[in-house]
Image 1 (cartoon, chains in turn yellow, cyan):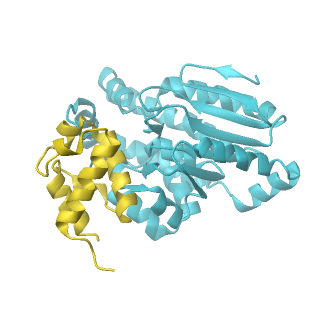
Image 2: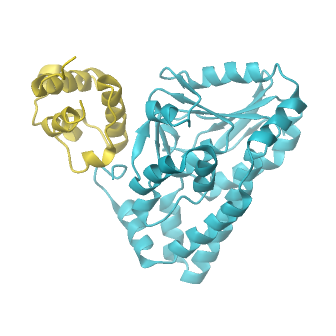
Length: 82
Length: 267
């Protein structure tokens, strides 16, 4: 099975984040700061990371998220593990 | 004392299992008050063990099982005391928490950690003293101490070395990364994975199963398969105290305590 495209990965991340943090999907854009848009702190970011790892069936060390705060960069980090 | 309700934890016996519940906001940080109450529990354990076949340790807080040692208290006490007194205080704290952890590790009944969410540092070490770890699907484990210029101080390294392969221990310790339950089960740390919010229920079912067996046989089997690395545990305290004396640790603790950003728990 081929890996999903970067756009598809980004879309799945936005959908999952919107669903879990109860934010309308249409309000999320790729370059949003997810800490601000979702209103989450670092513990909730770890929760999001765990959900993404389960969803994509990958392991993403949290040090790869250091300084990452927008969905697009997050998607790139995940894409590199698929 | 079959039942206790403290400020940081509570316990009671339900269906033949002692349930030790952690409930200190925000995420069961282990400081002096928690230690006082853990010591009460350790003192009560021999009598409790006569009436129960299992012990379940869990958290009632949404954030997780435990974020580990109370770093704010550690930092503040270091600021208030002269260096020598602060170091003696750290050593005394470690010796006391080790005594509690060793008592739980050697308890003559089957012990189960039912963990969810953040299970970091000292919280991870508390889970590691238990015979069986049952983890909620959203649990996350981490030894972040090297970020502060320290090593785990509540017995984590000797118990990880006892339970896991050394290559895995090096990865977890030297990268300080957090990892999820799939990884935790893959490396042999977690016995069972429960759905979100179901770890305590699964732990109760496991405690019920444990209760079917002869108590003495179970205690002897446990002692046979789970040696306690006392010498390494003592060495860990010495290494921790040697590292704690350095200015880099004070700076690491200050950075954590004074961090007002959104990412203090990310490396």
